[in-house]
Image 1 (spheres, rainbow, N blue to C red):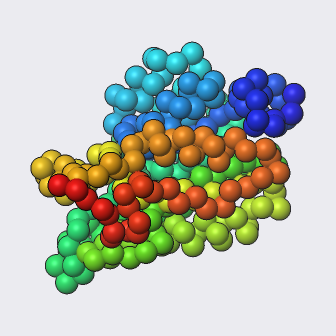
Image 2 (image 1 turned 135 degrees about the horizontal axis):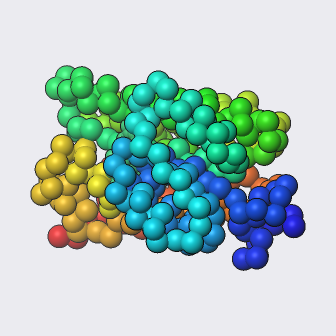
Length: 267
Ligand code: NAP
């Protein structure tokens, strides 16, 4: 049965076989990645989930009647992508969708005061990690002549904001890389999409402020931010348009946020 993406009966089938489609999601233990895993599992997709913390991945595995493979992998490891690809090949899996979601902001200080360690972790995760995984998975998609990659960018990759410096730089890199990857891959029938959210209430700010929960909570006070499910729904939509349709770039913002550093707060 061909995939049309338009009816419930067909959305879980891949193009060439009558088998459920499979999504590989990095950073699936929290926030947007976890909500995306739950959304796709709920719709009958099989999953390969990657993160360092296993607990939530195992909960997803236990909660849905689909195949869920969980991999304890740090995407900063140069072998991360190859290890994932080896697992996929060894287990005879086919990846229809790669969601490059693992990422973080670390710190919010001006460039002359920021911690170099924060910069390293953001560059290693948001940029190099995405590259390691993509480098290993894209040959499998090229070989199968189909596939879809969805990169989690950010409004921070469209507009810089004060103290955003290296987080901005990594997400601007994701923006550029998404365009360049598409140019390299579209002739193989592979779609490449960027989802660029504004403020989403997840563990993101707690991580950014090194565990300072009160500072993190303040970020979301006085307006309604997106929640992870809003973004998961957008990812679902992009993954389920008909095969001849490619959404290149989707910016999704809270209504109360007009630009990266412009949030209407009523406190
Ligand atoms: P989150 O709740 O903190 O989730 C981040 C996820 O990334 C976690 O599952 C974490 O898993 C994983 N991760 C981090 N470092 C990793 C590593 N080295 N290896 C493997 N997995 C790693 O944050 P989120 O808001 O959902 O963020 C998801 C993505 O959305 C990020 O790329 C972020 O930049 C982007 N984004 C977020 C917002 C926002 O406002 N929240 C806005 C725009 C874009 P483990 O810690 O278990 O490894």
